[in-house]
Length: 368
Ligand code: ADP
Image (cartoon, rainbow, N blue to C red; front, top):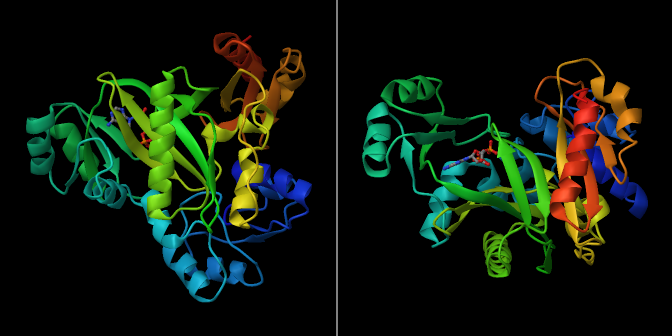
């Protein structure tokens, strides 16, 4: 697995269950997966030769994040080692302009967008779609970094001056945001998890509920759309399809993650087979496991760093008092706003499960 963050750490746990050896390419020897003993090599995922050298001796290569040299993955694949997801499919997760353009051309619903190279392009887009405009950097953005809402030309100019390729997007009125996790084998079989309702703040996923509190027909549409598009672009492993539901009732594809995803963390306790187990099974082209939920309602809240050193670790015993709270900490430095863990609660009522998970997170942060 290229990358050794919390996703690799939780995939490592699944690998232990299945007696699969999971080596990781880590940025540092204090990366979350390295801290729990995953065999590792240190290297930069954007350095083509580091990734190619890492792959030597592996049976298959997969990812913990998408900020990886696509050229390296293509070279590895040409050398006879399978890469899951396929590097061509991975472009849909690495390059927003490519993904938007290609999906639009193939008739899939995406937000109105345009490539903008100059302020005049943003103005022209705003004339048609109104201010404010959402500007997104085409590559290398994550967790809202590289997403800017600009109210006018001056702000737009400041953003474009940073360099890089930018995509303008209509600022949508969102009813809610959904994510559908698909696990797909390279040979074609796929399963989907119940639709997840995600809540973002400042571009970061803060909490989620599964199944989503939307109509059954919308859930069906979301699952059908996700399955169809993942199959069409030939992605495999776990693929998270993030979607917008507008106040007008439109279902639009926002973006893909081609690896275990934050929106699927609640599957560890909440589903028969966790996303991490199904990712390994899919990557190895093994039979996939049941995605059924084991409770009527599953809620998850992310733990973000407060900036106070080791606050979550100090407060952990107190948070463990919260009935039914499954607490996961990733062993990361607790920098302000950084995802350092998550809490899952199963229940019969989504609001009640969410309230308990929030409570545990507040205690971890020292706010209670
Ligand atoms: P990232 O790749 O950093 O996760 P996203 O494109 O998913 O960035 O945007 C992050 C969040 O910003 C979304 O989850 C959503 O809440 C908000 N957002 C993004 N695009 C739009 C849009 N066109 N209209 C309204 N909100 C948006």
